[in-house]
Amino acid sequence: MEVSVTVNGTSQTHDVEPRTLLVHYLRESAGLTGTNIGCDTSSCGACTVHLNGESVKSCTVLAVQADGQEVTTIEGLANGEELHPMQQAFHECHALQCGYCTPGMVMAATSLLDEIPNPTEQEVRIGLEGNLCRCTGYHNIVKAVLQAAEGNA
Amino acid sequence: MIPAAFDYVRAGSADEAIAALGEYGDEAKLIAGGHSLIPLMRFRLAAPAYLVDIGRLDDLKYVRDGGDHIAIGALTRHRDVEINADVQSQCGLLAKATSEVGDNQVRHRGTLGGAIAHGDPASDIPSALLALRATVVAKGPNGEREIAIDDFFTGFLETALEETELLTEIRVPKVPDATWSFQKFNRRAQDWAIVGASVLVNGDQAGVGLVNMDSVPFRSSAVEAAIASGASAADAAEAAAEGASPPADLNASVEYRQHLARVLVRRGLEEAGR
Image (cartoon, rainbow over all chains, first blue to last red; front, side, top):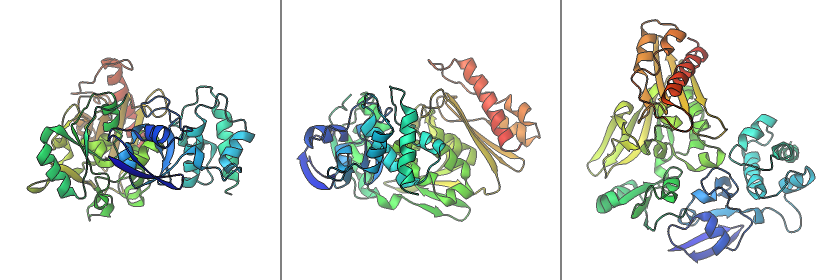
């Protein structure tokens, strides 16, 4: 069936099977491969994108459910060459090792700061409980989120 | 890990959804946030031929003051329940249990009605609704009916909802003066509870709902009776697993779950000031 989704500000229309998951739609129909597929079971958070401004796991959303809605992926965060403050903070704090979880982490973290602009360290850790990093890099990820939040103060 | 093929129907109203259920019968499943159903479909544990999407029925997304209760539309998302000031002040136990469901991303999509209609004994929310003695409202072709939460869960992933009924509202009694506690034991953040306990103390009455202690969300009537007859928290909690048939799995044996139930209920009663 036909699905129209505004992805990173641009409206796109594709013919998809109803069973198509949003993450496959984004990677294969929209051609945006920044969103990773990790566990495939709504556990790891690698596929986190924003749906109408809020973090969701795109492996557990059907593309048809996003019909007529707005999706932002990691590709939609930066302003041209200028990194989003969260991306900049991840860069400066060395908040990644292999980088696989990073797009999901950044999308989850930006959504978290929309809800809690100045979180405590504990709130960041709880807020990112849905995102797994297998390089055990949580310490610098939390540091990056707190640094990005300072810009909100 | 791709769901089996299905036909997709988007309902424009509750009546349209009920009509679709009438037309497709047991070939159809309702989908709201999809955070219970989509994983089942991906594992091919569920393969409905028709998926009826009720996710856009905005008139079922609300939290209202119903006089002696808080009325919550079935399609209200966990996130919106968790942060609602009325839910927090009038039935805070539900806000707390909801905040323990999954993670932020899950709570942005999952709905209160969906979590209940799924009928999963491992879900946190039903235990709170048992402790709070909630009522659910179901709408079918012949109108609405109320179902007491104790009559709602009928078996593993089974509920009292008829094939053509849509769960529309959850009514939670206001208990602003009650004290409460939500206890959840698991090994990793975000995991399902190995055992969980919702404990509500209102004067000399207690409400105790347990997570993952039976094939259905379990009310610990023995603890409630003990509290009503004046038992201490420690003595009452000894009865926590009475009458329950907990599952055994990789996480815990039957005996360990019974032990956890006693410990968590005791902690819950103590935190609630008993």
